[in-house]
Each structure stands twice: as structure tokens, then as C-alpha cells.
Image (tube, rainbow, N blue to C red):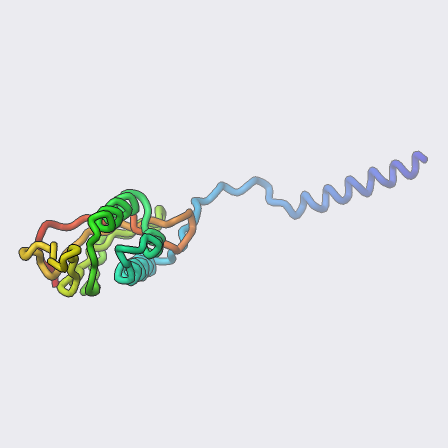
Length: 179
């Protein structure tokens, strides 16, 4: 019986010793959570892709059908999401009809932080075809609206380490046209 216990104890000690030899001497220091982007260029490309998908969804909106709003909301977070929900709801309540397409004219890379997976772009939009009309078919778009609009857009990752970006903020940069 003693021999069995000794053999079992020896076997356990040998196993623990063997496993300990494979383990590192000290635990490694934790590294920061990696982002999904290998470079700033990759982050800018992901932001552009997100914004183009957002514009495609926006172009498909039917103000009389709130179900069409959901594909727009899928690209938004934070203040951009809150603002979009209010705006689309107000346009629907006013019984306005949207026609025409918004088109992206250009992007300007502003900043990309790979540690926080945040990206900022300036976006130039062509809204010359877009009109909003009331129930009488009369346009409610101001005649002074510029056909090109410059926006500052901020993106953030939907979760740490993800390459999927959402639009968090979008602000008009004055009433200046862009090219």
C-alpha cells in the first residue's frame, strides 16, 4: 500500500514537474486589446465602406415605411443614431416624400487611431437630385441649399478588436460647397 502511494505520489510529482518545465517562468504582461486594423489606410478604407453602405441604405428609405429606416440605423451609433431616428420620424410625421439619390463625391482622410479603432473623415456629398415634397407635391427643400455638402464624420468600432465601424457623429461643416 505504501509502495502504491509512493508510486502515485512520484508519478504526480513527475507530471507536475514536467508541466512546470513547459510553463514560462513568469506570466507575460497583458498586451493591449488589438484592433482589427493593421494600418491607418485599412481603417480609412473600412470607414469609407461603412459610409457608402450607409448612403445606399439612406437612398432606399421610403418615408412612409418605417421598416426601411432599420437598414440606415444599422450603420449608426451614439448621437448619429439618435439624430437620425428623430429626423426620419419627423419627416414621416410631416408626410413628406423623398426622391432622388445622394451620392458620395469624395472622402478626405482626417484621423485614424488604431488603438481605439476610431476614424474621422470629411465627406463631400452630392445632394443635387434629392428632393423632399409635401402632400401637395411642393418641394420643402430651401432654394438656397448647396448641391454639394461637406460633412465631418466620426466612426468607431462596434466592439474591441473589430473591423466593423459604425457612424457615431456626423456634422455639416458650415454651408460650404465641396468638390
